[in-house]
Each structure stands twice: as C-alpha cells, then as structure tokens.
Length: 364
Ligand SMILES: NC(=O)c1ccc[n+]([C@@H]2O[C@H](COP(=O)([O-])OP(=O)(O)OC[C@H]3O[C@@H](n4cnc5c(N)ncnc54)[C@H](O)[C@@H]3O)[C@@H](O)[C@H]2O)c1
Image 1 (tube, rainbow, N blue to C red):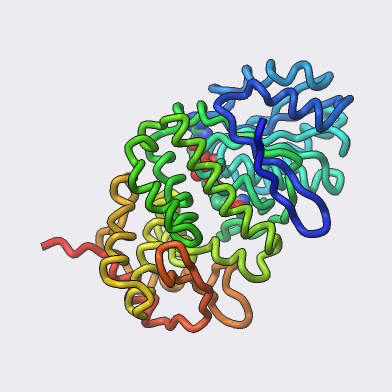
Image 2 (image 1 turned 90 degrees about the vertical axis):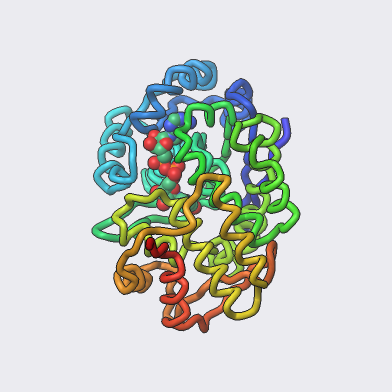
C-alpha cells in the first residue's frame, strides 16, 4: 500500500491514499485506531444512496458501532444548522473524542464533517473519504474546513487535520460529468502554478482522463495531491506560499457569488484562471500564445472560458469580501510561466476589471 504523507508544522502528518476501491480501508482504520468503539459516517443524500451500505459493511470489523448522519446534498447544507444537527446525533449516541468521524462525500461533506470533528468535544478523530474529483485532488488535503454563514462562503471554520484521507477512484464513475469537469479545474491549476510538465501531461492525456481510465486517474491524483502537499506542508496556515493555491480564486469566488452559485466552483475557478492569465499576459509575464493556450485548454475538459454579458462592477464588488484580502491589500496570484506562479500585491482595479471584461463574449 503506497500513500503520500502530508506533514504539518509541529504536530505530525497524515497519509493520503489513492486506491481503486475501498478494499484496504478497514485495514488502514484498524491499524490506526485499534480498539475503536464508534464511527459516525457523515455523508449527503446523493452519496449515501450509492456508497453508504458498502462502506458500513467494509467498516463493520473495525469497531463496535457504525452509525451515520445524512444531510441534504449541496452547498445549501454547508451551514451551522447542519453542524448542529450532527452534534445532536453524536450526543444522542454517546460519542466522545476517542470515537471516529468519517466524512464520505464531496468537498461540501469534507468541509462540514471536518469542522464537526474539529469542534465536537474540542476535536475528535477524523478520516476523510473524498468522493468527488475536486475533493480527492484538492479539498480533502490541507485541513481547511468550515461552513458558509450569512452571505459569506467558508467564513466560519478552522484548520483541522484528518488522520487519514482515502480516495477510491472507482467512485468517480458515478460522479456527474459536470462535477468531474469542475474538479479538473483544480487539477489544471496545480499544473499551471507548479509543474509545467504535469500540465502538458494533462493536455496530452485528456481523453484517458475524461474516460476515467483508472491508471490515468491514479497518476493524475498522485501528482495533484503532491503539489498541494508541497504548499500545505510548507505553509499550513496560509501565511505565505500557500496563497499560490488561490490562483484563479479571487475572481473565481467573486463570479461564484455574483451568479449566486449557478456555476460550479471549478467552473468559476477556470474563468478566474483565464482572467488571471490575461493579467499576467498584459503585464508581459506570459506571451500571447501562452495566454491563449491556458485559456483554450479548459475547453477539452468541458470548462467555460467565457460568459454572456454581465455587470462587471457587480462581480468586482464581490472581490472586497473575499477572505484572501488582507489588511495590507489584495494579494493576487499571477503566472510567470506555465508551471510557475507568483504572489503580487499591486494589481490595480483597472487591471482586474479589464480581465473580468475579457471573459465576456460579445455576440453579434
Ligand atoms: N477545504 C478546502 O480546502 C476546499 C478547497 C476547495 C473547495 N472546497 C469546498 O468544496 C466544496 C465543493 O466541493 P464539491 O465540488 O465536491 O461539491 P459537493 O460536495 O457538493 O459534491 C458535488 C455533487 O456531487 C455529488 N457527489 C459527490 N461524489 C459523488 C460520487 N462519487 N458519485 C455521485 N455523486 C457524487 C454530491 O452529492 C454533490 O451533489 C465547496 O463547498 C468548496 O468551498 C474546500
């Protein structure tokens, strides 16, 4: 069994395992938590219907009781109400901090379940089983967790490390195509910010990837996770280099909010990356060909590169509420070349608005 190890400052490390199926899950859990009494699987209504029974039976030899908490699928459930209802379930079942919470699902489930684990009894054991591509490649690694509150996304939360992340690529076969493409945005981002060779591999192997070839998926996820690992290990609390992972996210989050989550996270990140690449090109950091290559290579992965006319001011005004703004000004991630990103803090309002405008397709 091979696993990538994610280390974090002062406190330890955890393995990220990428397998085809869940056949090794129980041995990982038993080895990590001998004499485990209770497991609560936190999952959503879509994923539970597909995988809860098989995971429950796979885990029946690891502990005495396996219970579940199921919430309505979707971002609308990423709330304190969902968290509170799960606390009630844990209390009713006498859960304590030596028991285990498992998140089984996409990024929403992972963020909610990790936040529950981080706060229930001041922190209990947590394992993440990501089932969407976005969650496998990105959100399950690095410890960020939390919920949306009021009009703000991910505004209440913490950083809490799991004991184990275990992804089974077979489950991607049931993931809707649009969700799969959304996850591809974060993977393309990983190549663009840190590994030009990997980026080219993604472009060359797009049909194997879109066909969900097991070997291609395993290679791709190992690479994407190791790029995320590089940043989160170096800078777990996002005080410096980890911000590079936000490439495409400043404008991406603003679009997500402006369109009231009509577009998926990865779709907005792809548009945000196209806009950030445009600013990089306008600053002569990228050539014209590089800019068009980056933008157009989202198309084979079924990601958007432009939108019908919208109100630029409306999108721009949402940038002010992004958590990635600091007191010292807006930190923006640009590309020096394919495979090398930099943090800059002098991107002007005009540059951002021009990049947003460049996303608009003008129909004749
Ligand atoms: N913590 C982090 O570092 C981090 C990073 C990026 C994104 N996020 C968060 O992740 C969330 C988005 O994640 P997501 O795109 O996975 O959304 P999601 O969890 O809502 O999953 C997308 C949809 O796919 C379904 N699904 C998941 N796995 C499936 C499978 N194998 N088969 C069939 N259906 C399946 C879900 O039920 C849901 O309907 C956002 O809330 C975002 O803020 C967190």
